[in-house]
Image 1: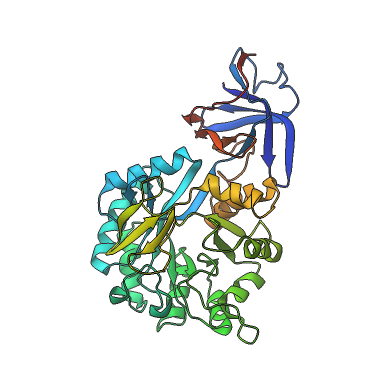
Image 2: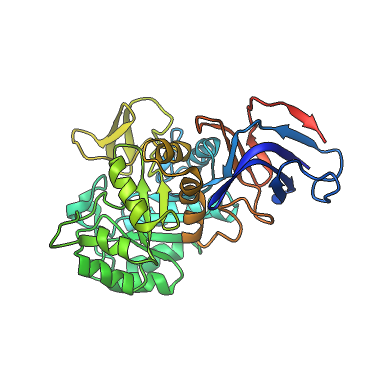
Length: 395
């Protein structure tokens, strides 16, 4: 029964400075401050313990919007690439991951969704997020404009059916024909309706929220901007408490000062940090496919080849949290909520992941004093064993 000692446990709203945590199988068995009591049944027996000497322990990250990484893409049609992407992000602390696709034909998307559903059924993925093709041409970003289409109910139903229950979220532009109808259809089907890649007005975005939209996809990016006489979808999202707002905090997609404004307006309990990473995350600069398009990576920035249009990122969740704390000034206990518990709540998974609580999965990340990941545990097993300055001891 592994026990972590002398750790800085990051819980929702507070940090336990000298904490301990024990696991039992896949679950967190007990946690507390000071030394673990030898008489406690949860830590009884001569189990090996790891002295973390002040390292932070945060809940495993939940990335609800990611297209790939480590040279693998979720929209490649090759399952092994999807497995490579999951393994890459796991090494950076993402213990719960949603596979995001990019715009393609309905037939191709049915194929991708059907294949990815197998990994959802195996427990490797938490679900599938369809980003496109039901988005605005004027805000398409790195999506092929020639493949965009209105969200006709029949097309939406085809993709949901292909996923066999694995499609958990669909991003669409509510101002398109059938946009509000599709939003209601998704909500009624138990699929998260998200609005993004949209030129919707404030009123149109509010209409989507009224029909059940609950996520704003990478807020500010690929959205009509805020204007003092036309607040747009960003303002609509921020003022509705039932809406979760995604943020790509890589220092390029959104200025740190604006990230701070979003946290101030919505709070960590509604801000979901995401990577929006594509297959070049963790790989060398160069050209890569992103769905039917080609993107170019230079210095960590991803752009549609030959343009200045951002095309996803090379971000990892550990760096997203680090940027939020060090560049924006958000306390680590709030940043950890946005990296774990908030996206878990958005996905309806917060009863099992997203925070360090007894009975939840033992999904956790060990961070050193510079907030760099040195160990990752998923379901009670080390995916990356911690490299701490402390020593292993025996209780």
